[in-house]
Length: 93
Length: 145
Image (cartoon, rainbow over all chains, first blue to last red; front, side, top):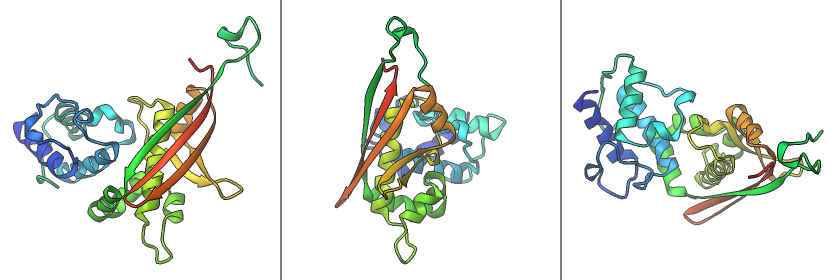
């Protein structure tokens, strides 16, 4: 997973996750729900990630675990992109 | 028919319990999601019945009523103890019973999970006031442990 992908994920999180803390203070494995992301914000996050990476999360991936950290999101995007190196089409969506 | 379970085998009884879930939702957050993601947000989260029930006379989505329904979905997920189960939001829907009162309808993955969790009956109550909406879900559960 490229650093660019994680940068885009962080940009999307900053804009859509309504976190009460600066995303840059959290490491890639920090639990985003424990950091204050609500379930409703995770919906916005999912939709914004779909825009940013030109993907669609299937029903089987609509779990808390898929969205609970930068690392988990990056893994999911890699899986959906098929090659482990998803191409970001924009930041912040 | 009620089957005898391991824990009640000696007496022929089945243990039952009550489980409660609650959730509070910001109306502003729903308004923002509609503004930013529009139809994609509405279609991914709400059932067609909910969208119909929550439209104003002019056909505009009523964020207060949608927020109450999102709170109901979250409260139901707590009752279902969803954990990391994949549960699309539309599989938990608020509908109306034959008296016009709010009721929960579980379909697909949510219905399957409810059966696996031993949930026999569900009830829901919704409210909204000012910037917040809330919902409480109560379940009667078989073999509660």
